[in-house]
Image 1 (cartoon, rainbow, N blue to C red):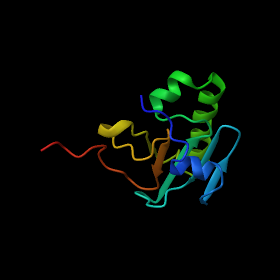
Image 2: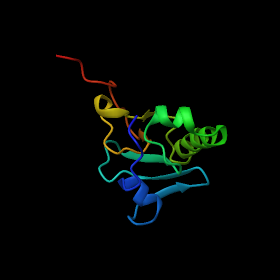
Image 3: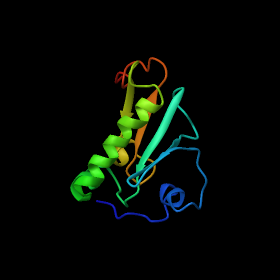
Length: 122
């Protein structure tokens, strides 16, 4: 597993060095609007702990961090009127999974029909 880079963009956002359009914050997470939205609602939810990926988070986060993270995702979906119509959560992991920032995060997308999850392989 890759070591956590304390200078990744999300770590800088958590430290307040880079601004974000915050939509939710509590003791476990910070959630903010994606700067390049792929849907009418595109929110990034990041844990406040230093976790590289979902497998790192699942293996090393405390039970309260894990519960707090996923409860926050559900609350944010409700607060942004996504639950009734449906939404998608995506956690890209590693190079083959398309992870661009080495800090575990979930993309919360909705506000319209999102179509098939993956394009068909050629």
